[in-house]
Image 1 (cartoon, helix red, strand yellow):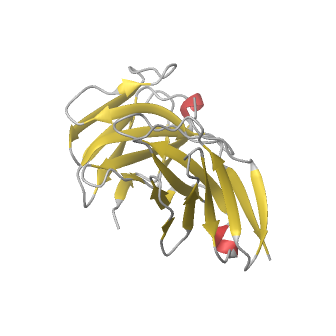
Image 2 (cartoon, rainbow over the protein chains, first blue to last red; image 1 turned 90 degrees about the horizontal axis):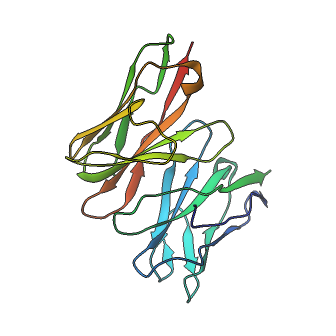
Length: 109
Length: 115
C-alpha cells in the first residue's frame, strides 16, 4: 500500500543533473514528501523533505508541483557516489511509513 | 545531524536461538520507531510501528510472538527475533522519528544470518 510511484531505474551521466520523479497523487494536506537514498547494505540516508514549497540543501533540490501530486528530486551535478536506490515517501502525523520500490539511479562515467 | 545507532551491524547465530537488535536515537527523542525487513534487491518492508510506552503495532503477516518489540524509552527500541530459523535471515533496519522536528532517521541496519 505504498503511497508513491517511481520509475524503477534511471541512468545519468556524471556531472549532469539527475532528475528523479515521484508521483504521490493521494497525498494528504498534512503529509510531507521525503526523499532518502540507500546504498547497498546500508540504512537509508535522509536527503531532503518538503511540504509544498520547493526546497534546496547542500545535497539536492526538491520541486513539488502546485497540486502536490508529484515531485522531482534534483541532484545538480551527479557523481559516481550518487549511484544508489532513491526512495520517495510521504510522511504525516503518526501514520506508519511504507516504502515503494524506489528508483535505482546509475551514474555513468 | 541526528543519528540513529543500530547494533549489532551483523550477527550470525544458530537455528533456534534468539537475537536482540537495538536501535537508539543518540541526540533526539523518538516517540515513534519503525522496524523494517529487507531482502536482497527488494525495498524495505515495514514490520511494525513502535510507540514509546505502548505495545507495537504489527503489519499483517508479521508474527508478534516471533518478532518481539520493546520501546521502553524515548531513545531505545529493541527487536528480538525469537527461535530464529534460516528463513529469518535478512537485513533488518530501524528508524526513529524525531519528536520535535518529526523528521525520520534510519539506523545502519543489521544483517542477520541464521545457520
